[in-house]
Image (spheres, rainbow, N blue to C red):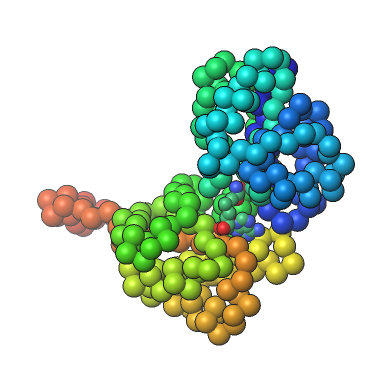
Amino acid sequence: ESTLYVVATPIGNLGDMTPRAVEVLQQVDVIAAEDTRHSKKLMSHFGISTPMVPCHDHNERQQTTNLVARLAKGESVALVSDAGTPLISDPGYFLVREVREAGYRVVPVLGACALIAALSVSGLATDRFYFEGFLPAKPSGRRKKLQALSGLTSTWAVYESTHRILDSLADFKEVLGADRYVVMARELTKTFETVLAGTVAEVENILKEDSNQCRGEFVVLVEGNKEERETTVDPQTARLLERLIEELP
Ligand code: SAM
């Protein structure tokens, strides 16, 4: 019925596939997948035989035209990415925008997201947070970005891959300082799930000493800048506050 379902899939543990996701994927007319070969395994595991079409960074515009035409015929479409929630550091933004603008419903089918999972076990402040996605691959760009993030007073998060985790941590140390508190969530929901918390220097040491700790997929969460958070009071207000404190019983 002319609906685009944006369907989250597991980030490792197949037990995180929701019954609703299975049902929707079975019932739609077509599944748009970031990588059809990759998603085929998931689909066959759950007995889903719905036809799939590819929809990734390199063909999203073209595929959007095709999918909007199918919605116009009254068909329903599901969007999945390789893992987790589509559009969260994954393709789909253009498709969702166009489908809504064409007047069709876009419905989220909730499930795993590495960012939210990591935040939920981090023990960091989560009342506000900032998500940067992947940092630039080149060191100079990465350091510049870290510089820009270093003053944020809220918790912030980046996605990182096994190839760059040590290089990134070295840049964290240089730009944010060795003592900034970080939480590193690795291989969430998988066999080697590990959550390390400590200063940048401490976490870096653990990874340097054990190359197994450098394997897999990471979410790095960084505590907000505490110095920036301490609000500086102008001298006049400070004097007034001092006087008020003196007057207090
Ligand atoms: N859409 C996904 C989501 O909802 O989390 C993210 C896709 S993004 C292309 C892949 C990145 O997400 C990985 O490089 C890693 O930073 C993070 N990630 C995905 N699965 C993870 C897991 N099981 N544990 C930790 N991080 C994970």
